Amino acid sequence: MTPAPARHLNLSGASNFRDLGGYPTGDGRTVRWRQIFRSNHLGHLTEDDAAVLRDLGVRSAFDFRGTEERVAARCAMPEISVHSLPVEPTVVAALRAITADGTPLSTDHAVEVMRDSYRSYVQKNTRHFRTLFAHLLEDRAPLVIHCTAGKDRTGFACALILHTLGVSGDVISEDYLLTNRFYRRDPNHSTDLPDEIRQVLGAVQASFLAAAFEAIDADYGDLESYIRDGLGIGKAERADLEARYLQR
Image (tube, rainbow, N blue to C red; front, side, top):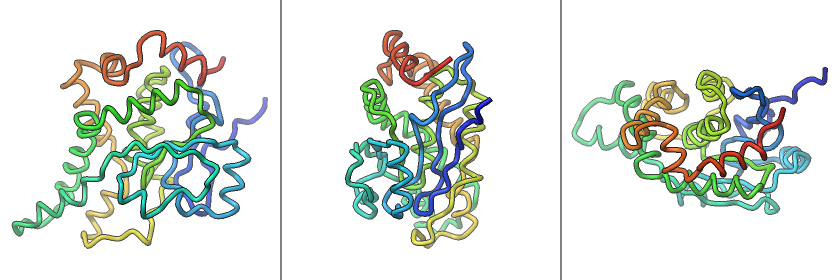
């Protein structure tokens, strides 16, 4: 049997660069390898990293970073078409607002602010995730989805893709949590927040993703309704996505 391709590609200038392929679906198919990748930003790629992405055939990047984040670290490969889907970061500003009245920050504050940010993906930014799915239907693969750290906005987007393709919730959770194994915090990106707070912000927790799905249930009734009404993926579109990104 041919061994499966490596899920994690250990790039020098990009952290947490992973393939979404190989995951099983409920009907016995699997997600195609080497079609959809996820990563942190692509602004610090080395020449060797760029050669890897060229060998993979990556043609498109879907970038969930906000305006200032994009300016600070633009994609290092001009041949990749970058599609901006801006979800502005809110976490650090929210934590600073808590301290503005003298309240000492705790890790509980950090966890709840992270959960709030995930709720906002649904409540305020669904249009950007809908646009991502419209692009996926245009068959732009191989492609990479990323934000700054490649773990939160990217993690939610990839969870939606895997759910839509029929991957189980348990497997999706396992993929999401792989970030804690492969993500490297950027030493050039520092804040004045206490280290224990930065530790929370630099990782993922199951409760973060759960907050987004709780918001989906609250606003749309259930995940299937969100996929249909929020993301614009009806039966025909779903069948098209499955034909493009699944295999027997």
